[in-house]
Image (tube, rainbow, N blue to C red):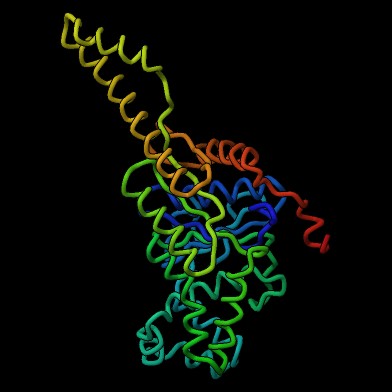
Amino acid sequence: MPALLDRRLIFVTGKGGVGKSTVATALGLVAARRGLRTIVAELASQSRVTRTFERESAPFEEVELAERLYAISIDPQSAMEEYLRVKTGAVGQALGSSRLFGALAMATPGMRELLSIGKAWELAQLERRTEGAGAYDLVIVDSPATGHGAGLLRTPRSFAEMARVGPIAHQAQAIATTIADPGFTAVVAVTTAEEMPVNETLWLAGELAEQQLSLETTIVNALYPPRFSAAEAEALTRARDRAGGAAGEAALETVLAQHGRSEAQREQLARLCEGLAQSAIELPFLFCDRIGPRELELLADALRSGLERHGLEPGVPAADRRDGG
């Protein structure tokens, strides 16, 4: 099986609020450092990645964030207009600009998801249909939250089975085949070590198995460091109980609360790994007001180390990949 960053398409999903977009961007930084021309594709017209780098961008624009690292915000309407323009020229362009046609298309169940994932698929092609656009070595899709993310991966196959014939069926089948190819595509889950996110991650692994897909790895974000042993925590508890002043008692209570949170996280982490029957990559909690480029670099360092420890580091240099090596 190829290493994670030897794939061309990676879907990153997870429960809302666990730092999925941040981790997807950090993974993009790791890939860019390895010499891979990488793009992070956000869906549903989100622009979190470009805002993190304080870059201005128009919708559907491929923006350079750092050396070999790019981002794009994909919205279904622009994806539909591009698809029609490429497939049918001026007629398609006229259809794409028609409000009635657009409303009907977007009302079709699953069409928005198919158009979005279709653009991500296009970004991962060596010969792209977007005029003048360069090829990428790796596309990282910042997918919707867990349930919608699993549905997104299911959409192309569902469309292919329903339509059966015609250009939509052909396109959907091509995308479905790409997603099902473990040498081309990987799915990564992001979670925190808390009960509900862990439950959703375990559910995702089962849902992917039903789709005959596998969860490549799980990244546990925002872990508190284990600072004290059990004996040290007991000593701190005794010290708190003997504290003579409110300030000292409050300080010790804060320390013990952080220790308790770290212990609770470790319990949930153990439950996650047992349920998945595999270990997870761990990322630290960053004590900061906001995540910016500097913080992303720190997470990228930790993520790279985790990938290496789990045997998921990339194996083939980017130049060799482009040459077919």
